[in-house]
Length: 264
Image (cartoon, rainbow, N blue to C red):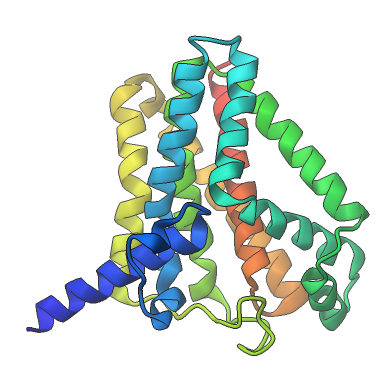
């Protein structure tokens, strides 16, 4: 009976994650209970399997019809359509808040909650998009597609650790979604690790030459995650949903940049 309840709970939480982190009408197939949305980060890398698969497939097959540079642009566009630019919105708010808020914690939070985009947000998105496009374009098409399959879930796994490292910066009533993610339990942490690391194993299996650089490939995103964690902690003493989204994109970008150096 207990096993059945746990399986049902995980099923609900997984559905909630796909509904929350994508803009596809998964809600028409199943409607999880409202409490499940507090656990969506536990299945964030799993949604990454889906978004990464669609993005990588768009790049791989698109390169059969268009020049590789065009296929990269189409792949990026496809992910934006699937996710509704949810994480990019978080990155823009993150750049605006931390760029324009100085050392005033409340001012940073207020700026991040403002729906209007500022100068730092625009510049942040432009630089992020440019580096993302150039780093993926610098890789052979097959390698770029495999890297996407690995980087998306792995980076979401790392970004999800923010919930364990600090409290939420606002109250639940002040949250944009009127919801605060719950702390990740030990079983859920194991599941999160499996979701994030399996695609990494696939990358090394299909590209064994990269095994000689496994420390760099895994360590650089972890280093970026730690640096961003220190910045967020020093300014806010807590995280927000925008911080999680920004962390994911910047950690993922660091992996693409690393691969562009290793495969040069």
